[in-house]
Image (cartoon, rainbow over all chains, first blue to last red; front, side):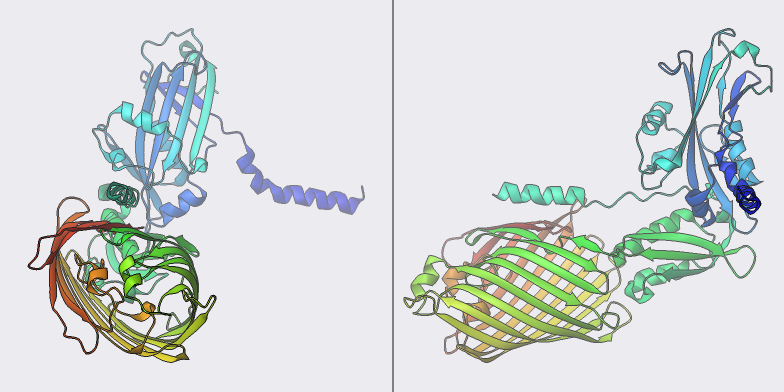
Length: 199
Length: 420
């Protein structure tokens, strides 16, 4: 290979580096906080593309995040938690705001895009009490952004039951690009220290 | 048969229900603290909206932005403009803490529909129907292909196919179009008995080039249209001389006016009028035909009032196709058109008053009174009346019972149908 060709190849590689960021694996990490199992997806970017454009157009979008815990690689689900969030984008401050719906309503504003993504994962957890510390466990995080045409008004109803939400969540939706699934396991609850991330 | 038509109307109503409009509530959207500086519409002219809706849009200016209200507003704009999608977009206003709302109207680039398709059943005339397929490139061109079997509009039953291709220029102000159709004619026994030699035809082929001009459009769905054209027709006669064809060529000119004010919630007023002139150009028929139609419809809340008037005059020798009829599903409902004039007539005057009241959901109860006369020049016009009641939906389904008012025994005529 001529020197000029090598140089050109190197330049192309350098130019491609910014685009390689999205290739990094989207992993799920688990930690235990005050008796609650929490997950994080540091590489998952879901406020992007069409979703981001809709937020920047002033729309409020509903995100549903479901955590499932299993001791048999998801043949059965032993614990489940599903939370709904409304994310909107402040046009003047160019910051995000997020509201967690349901009985324990919480909200945050003036967040960056990454902080908003992190906030949603930080506020959904599974109770860790009663888990066998030495048994292998698997955890799955499923996130979907809801198209207002598909979602019913019941999503905003604070009294809606978890059963109905889970049933609705399991249905296929039009835009599969608006759905993200991540899994982690096996891990052992006894080996998780408070606040410690296990990869 | 009635049950089948009823079921078809019911299914149509079920499946044409509007999609549920939904948006996260106001307090979850951080932009709801900003004030609306302006509301703009892109992708369509605002003048196509009703005045009521335009006034309502103005009321949002100066208010806090409400995602819920604008989602509902978008739905109403979409409905009035018959657009594929209307999505509200928010942009920064000219001053801090203010926002501009842009309602982005996305029309269908190519719209395929079966509008104007219909199925109807009439107590004496039997079944009529048309299956129409429209392929439209909005504001540019439109192709309509239809298969039909119609026994209501003319003396004869015409069954056949038609195709119409239209173009649109200068924002719809000039619309040339070509219509071609071929149909086979069938006659009621009373028409066969009354008809003279060489009067009945077995089939008719038509070709009709027209140009429609819209010289004036008002600011609130107000429009005046002038259609000028020529109709070339060829009839294959049912005469002992086999395969004898005759022709009827005519200039066809129509003036139409339409005015719509308000909306249903606050009271909508629709006024329509048309004047049609058909002048024979030559061929085997020679005639002049004039027809005037006027319509008034007032919707307010759950009530609807409709008034229609028709008058027509025909001179010379015209084919059945151009003669007037009454006693069908449009004029003098309840009467039997073959008893009134089995060959049609050359004079008509008629009016109809109908009141409808919304019952539940899309259903509406209706009652009407029809009056009119159908006669031939030189005869005495006899005024006839009929009354009736029925059910209908906004989607086009109807089921009416009509009673001709006369001294003899009471006869009931059932009419039902649906548009798709």
